[in-house]
Length: 421
Length: 185
Image (cartoon, rainbow over all chains, first blue to last red; front, side, top):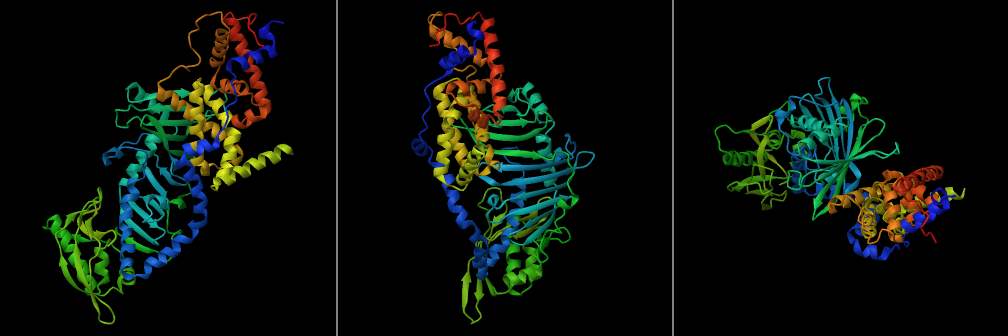
C-alpha cells in the first residue's frame, strides 16, 4: 500500500507536521495578567448578595427628607433626553429628521436586543412596527437601570408623533410630542435591516468606505461571518463590525461591535435581531395596561408647560422661571409650580413639596450655562428662606436650579425647570 | 450515563463561574485552554500568536460568562470567541498568510520541507475542516473533546476527519508528494 493510501501513515505524518508539545495551562499566571477580567467575574458574587436590598430601602431614605424629594421628582425630566439619545448606540452618527422622508428597508416587525460589553445581563431592547410604506408605525423600547441609574429602568412607546416614557422607579409617566424616536428607529432598521445589511456593506465597500471579509463555513448550521472593517482615519475610526448571517434564511442574526484601541480590537457589544417580520401584538405598544393605577402622569401634549419666552432674552426667561416657581411655592400654588416644573400635576407637587415651607426669595443670581455638555440652558443660583413648623427660619441654596426650553420639538419657546435641585 | 454526569458537572461548573466563583472558572480554563490554542492556531498558523489568542479568549469569557444562556454549550461558545479573536489578530497584524506555514525551505529535500508541504495541504482545507484536523493532530484531542468544542456529534467528527484526510491526500498527490521518502518514525 502506498503511504498516502495508508491512514496510519497519514495520521503520523499529520501529527509530526502540525503537532506540538501540549500547551500547558497556567491559571495562576493568567489571573495575574488579567486582573480586570478576574475582578469582573468575582464582583458578580458580591453583587448577587447585595443587589436586592438596595432600591426600596434607598428610596425610603431619599424620600424621608423633604428637600431631597424635590431632587427625586425633578430627575424625571432629565431622563427623557437621555433615553432618546441612547436609542442608537455603538457610534452611529447623529440623525437628521429630514432623513425620515424616504424609508428603504424590508422590515415590518423587528425585535432588537442590544447587549453592552459591561452589562451582559440586561440588554436594551427595541420593538419596531413599520407600516406598508415602511415608516415607523409603533415603537417600544426598554432602557435598563444601568443606562441611567438616576432614572431607573424606563419603558417607552411611540405612536403617531407622541412618545410616552414610564419611569418605573419614579412611578411616573411622561407624555410628549416627539419625532426623534421615529427618526432614530427608522435609522436603526435601515442600517441594521437583517435582509439588506450585508448588501449595503458591499455597496459601501465599492465606494471604499469599508473593507469586508466573508467567511462562509461549509457546515451549513454555522453562520456566515461578514467582517466589516472601517478605515482608522474615517468617521468610524477603525471600528469593526462582525455580522452573523443565517445560512438558510440569509438574515443577519446579530452584529458584534469592536472598536480599535491602541492597535487592538476591543469588544463593545452585540445587537441581536429577533422575530424578523413576525407580527408583534399591538398591546406591546400601549402602556396603559402596564403602568400602576397611581402612576404620576406628566402630560405635555394636552397642556402647555413652562413659561413663554416672549420678548425676554434666554437669561432673563431663565431667571423668571425660577422666580415664578418659588413665588408659586410661597403661595402654595402647586398647579403653577408643577406647570413650571415640566408639567407635574398639582396633586403630586403638593405631595412632594407640601412640607417645604418657602417663605421668601432671598436672591436670584445671574444665570450660567449648564455645566454638563449637551444638557443646554442654564443654572440659576439662588437662595430662598424656609420656615419650619416651630417658626425657625433657614436659608436654602438649591442645587442649580436648571432651566431650559421645554422641548425643542413641540414647545421650543417655553422654558421650564428640569433636573435635581 | 457517564457522559450525562460529566456534562451535568460541567454545566454546574459553568453556573458556578457565572455566579462569580473564580475556581470554577479556573477549572474551565484548565479544561479548555489547550483546545483554544489549537483552534486559534488553525486560524493564525503561528504558535506564539495562538497562545496569546487563547489568553485573550479566557479574558473575554471571564468577563462575559454571565451572558451565556446554554451552559451545556460552553465549549462551543468559547470556540466562537476564539475564532473572533484569532481573526481580529490576523487583521491587526496585517497577516494574510500564517507565518509558520510559508517559510521558504533552505533545502527542498529536507524533512522540514516535507512537513511544510503537509502543513500546506492542511491550510488549503476549508475553515471548518482545517479546525478539525488541527484540533485532532495539534494536541491529539479525542473525538469527544473535539465534538464539545465544535458542537458537532462524535460521529460527525469522525466522518469529517475522514473526508478531510482524503482531501489532504489528494492535494499531496496532486503536488507530486508520494510520501515514499517521508520519515514518520
